[in-house]
Length: 224
Image (tube, rainbow, N blue to C red; front, side, top):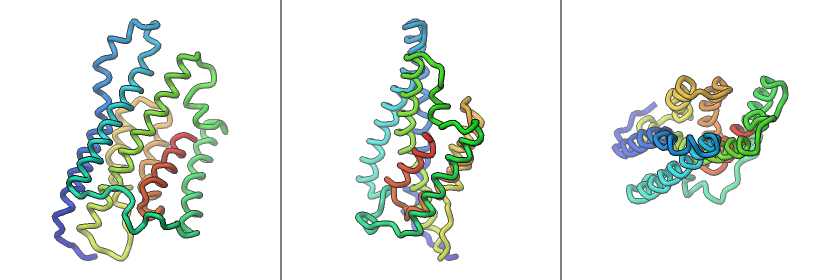
């Protein structure tokens, strides 16, 4: 392993720190919950929070993309990978990494489809709509999560030059938003989300550091 003093890595680490803060910036939506407490007996609160969270994250993604262009930070698929197909072994490994957690989590919830379990089998139309909004909002959050993994991975690779591929992004994802979500967020299947936070980074590596395939597969794991 060779250590290289590349000051450009600082930009990537700062960006990763900003993204980590953005992942939890949706807590601002909680400030406006009292406004919706009395609307439809408070049943619209979850939907409001989900929609507001999606908007906040969406704006932040737009600002981050704009800043990356100005600062020449590349957190998306590199130019040399665009338009190139993945090798057979990559497709096979990605398929296994995607389908395996789906099977495991399905077994843990009595062989149900995870999204059905998450949305609820016996809910009102309003409750179902609220749950759907939360699921869709997570799609925007997943963009930030993959951007975080990409920033960390590329930042560390600018410092440590080695012939081996070390999943820095996966490790930091596990140690940051993985553990934070596990201890702070009161959601079901917390252990599952903690483990897959590590898996997201591995998928990013196996995909050849391709942003879109990583986002699609990670979101599929979250959904199914």
